[in-house]
Image (cartoon, chains in turn blue, orange):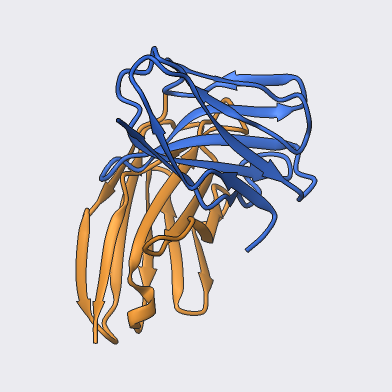
Length: 113
Length: 113
């Protein structure tokens, strides 16, 4: 398993705190994605980026922010505005579009203290 | 936006039996339908996909069928083995975007030895 790395594996957030989840890939992929996984809910798209310095909201972007300053990196910030942040967060990348295989990271479990 | 329904949510079969998971989608402009497998504690991985110009695709023991008129597609696993036990997600692209995949809620498949 290599290619796309997420850290940390576990993260705890205090009330009112912003936390940032890291996602790095060395696959030379142009597109990167953030998904949220809740039990029994499948994978829901938070944000995606097709190219450096550009990103688009997904289906559940409220309370989250992202940046794409480098091709290899796509960090996700969970802000205090996200009232229900406890979930498993998966980062993914693809060479260009979703019609090419998505490579997923190993995920970050975020919990609220 | 796209809505993907997946059934059943859980499926238990005996080793050697076949398993079928069904999905329906709402966006008639969708053209790409992948299936991802997520073993316990691991990241999702693409196992098979199908495009709208094809009605069926096979890869060894797994096959996917697509009925564009009815807007449904199915995953078929024959001669199931214990290592097939996992959560399976269907997905469909959003016809207007090459970067958005909408996932079903997943099917937990258990293959009993």
